[in-house]
Length: 451
Image 1 (cartoon, helix red, strand yellow):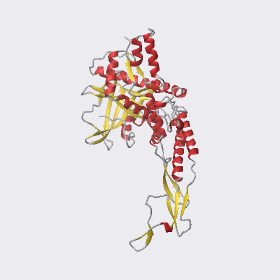
Image 2 (cartoon, helix red, strand yellow; image 1 turned 120 degrees about the vertical axis):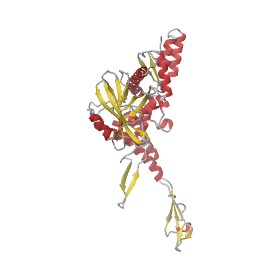
Image 3 (cartoon, rainbow, N blue to C red; image 1 turned 90 degrees about the horizontal axis):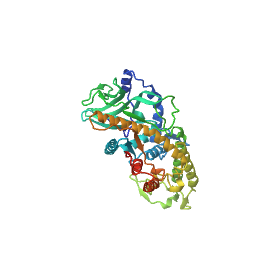
Image 4 (cartoon, rainbow, N blue to C red; image 1 turned 180 degrees about the horizontal axis):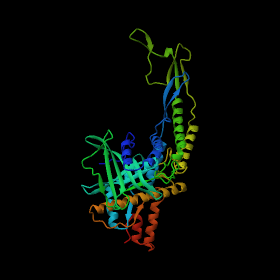
């Protein structure tokens, strides 16, 4: 059993799972210290909260509900980072070609890269994400599960990283929803094992058929990998959790939606109004015998009736729009947001494309973006290579005939930020000139071993 990222209502670790971890002498302090920040970042990604839905008072003292329009800038930033770092062209290359081929086939059949991109999106928004192995001992096969900060509980860590970790999700059985805790910890043999506990809707620990309390993995590699953006955590000292990529840009997120909402309100308030005198309206008789004017339409807010007036039977009013000034403010807010979130001031540019850019339109001369991409690729490489090592070790433990993989290298698709086609042509010319071997070329561009 197991679930991945949940859609719809936000999922937060229930108290029964926390109590179970405490009874095993694990501390949940790191989770409790970071949870308020994670909840705040989650609300910005969803464009929810008091900033977007609030109450105001009119000149007569009447209270009314107000909803601020949003282009969901926090989520947009995270999605851009996900598309910049990972796509289906990303590959893992091992020292042994047999392992490279098996990994490529496994990850492709499991749609790993698409789901990993979603994990990066959530990790960059909430500060932390994770890949973790899930083992089916009966079928003797492994799977990779995806988690975000709302489901991750580090159990042991130091400056080198998280050594042991628990993951809490909601699974579903015929009896109803179940909260499932899986602890990836080092056993007495020095190899990782996965300990699982399940809780029903009342918070009681239950035994679920087919779920083993403890599963040996046969891996000395951590059977999980933490994903974090290359942003220092300034919210909680010595925390194993990361920090959202927009944590220091919340004011910029607000400014984008303030400018956008003001721009749309300007257009809405600037519609032409037509004032008509009573004589322009037909009348109808109501059930009680009264004569009332026939409206143009219940939803019509552009035509108004001038009561008891026969002069100027038709009067138009069209206020001047300030959309040009509003658009400049919107563009400036987008530039500030891009700069503070590591994408550079030119990434979200209205003038060139009429709306915010997509990842495929990133200019390769954006040096700030290039540097930040490299930093985040380096941080992400460790997580991807680590989970690949653990996956291969577990498959060997299940009896699959795979050699030792050697080093695992992540090959990113950098065509978004650099002219990969030109580099390929240059390398092909060097192969033709004898300056580069065919094996070196294929190792660089296809991840094959040179041996």
